[in-house]
Length: 118
Image (cartoon, rainbow, N blue to C red; front, side, top):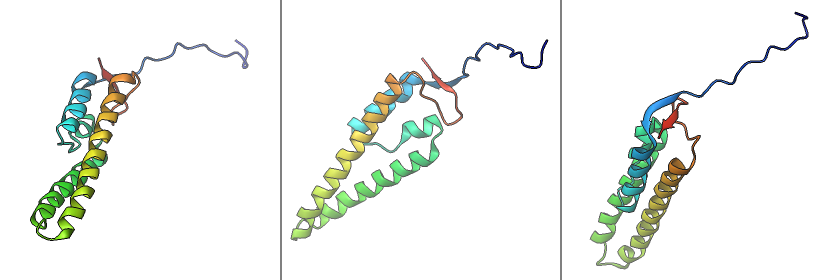
C-alpha cells in the first residue's frame, strides 16, 4: 500500500439517545399554549441553561401579572398589564417554535449530542 492511498471508511451512524421526539415536542407545544412555558422541554433535553432562562422569565412574568392586578386602582396597573401580556405571548411563541423545530428537524439533538428517538 502506497503512503498516498486513502482508506475509505463507512460513515458512522449518529447515536440515538433515550429522549423521545414526540414527548419533548408535545411538552413544548402544550405547555406553551397553556401559558405555562417554564422550559420543561429544555430540561427534558438536557438544555439546563435554556430551561432556567424560560423558567425565570415565565416566573417573573406571573409575578408581574399579580403586581399589575394589585395596581389596577391606579393607572400604572393598566399600563403594565399589557407588558406582561406581550411577554406571555412571546413566551408562548418561543415554546411553540421550539416544539415545531423538535418535530420537524430529524437531526435535532439533545444536550449530549444524541439524536432524539422517533
